[in-house]
Image 1 (cartoon, chains in turn cyan, red):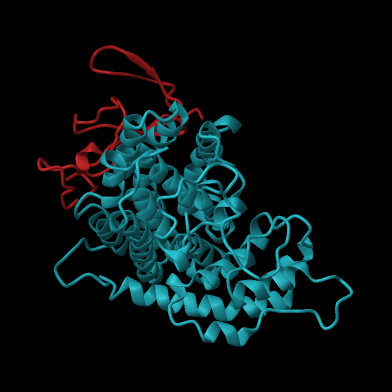
Image 2: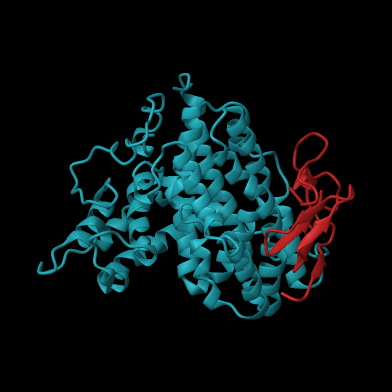
Length: 371
Length: 72
């Protein structure tokens, strides 16, 4: 699938395994194991990551470039640059020095990107429904936050993207959806693990319980990221994240970067947990619909099984995340309530944006028959 | 874990920790395979005895406003 700079134009051309990662044309430098840059920001990051140790002065991304971006959420170059900088904290890149994780030049380059990104996310999220109006909600902030999170995530129409995948998508479109989501699901739950040492008491215990389930409950073969990789493998699709980053939309990268923004900045820990709550609480219903779509298309069992697992797991995780994590956090520190609500609103807004981009492409350009 | 704990969640599912099996209304013994499970309390789940969030669906297929625990 094409990125946002060629939205829709390649839609109908079948994408086969092995093509991921080789679609984007650019004159920018290419480096093995790194995503293909697509503009000045991501080119600057790649140059900085691939510079020879003896190069002086060391190349660093231009801080001024970030200020020229007017729509961080829809700017693929911006989101790719940020994704690569965050990736240094997760797995890094082959051939790139692990020392760069805490490199002052790169951290200084990341700061204006994060500031612009956070401002755009806050604007997209709109006015927060917090504090609740007089006479609404329960007396305790923890209960009021939990009630509000259930209300924010439990109302509205059925998710359109999941409905499309359930009823209308052809196999190529279903694969394209799996490819977009792979950027997150191949690293499923990893951002939230950064939150554990930032919590104490009841919310820490509840997050650890949720993560233990996400991480397979003691069984490596049940690791959720591994279940997703199994689903991709069953479709002869690759299982390395960088392949999918190269074809991911700006908004998809934004939805993943949002988790890192919240999880890697301790001051935003409340937002990170609110995001987790909204993410879990809006997962079970669409997963059921997507599983039905996978079975309708006759895809290998591993695909539907990944979504089946989440129908059940996320019905548990919704309760844990809203009550035992966010509720308990606000019980400890009522000042974090607004951040929790921000995180939930941001999750809903950014994920909806990413879904709309995908769906509008399919609706604008009728797909040819699969295969 | 030696403690078995059932947590009632408003009018949502009940969370069960520390159990090794659950007996359904039909007498079927279902093993517990995750550290904490959500038991369906609305009777509408298609994955009994586990919650599958079916409680969120209204009669017209649209998710209804969830209050006091996500059960519509």
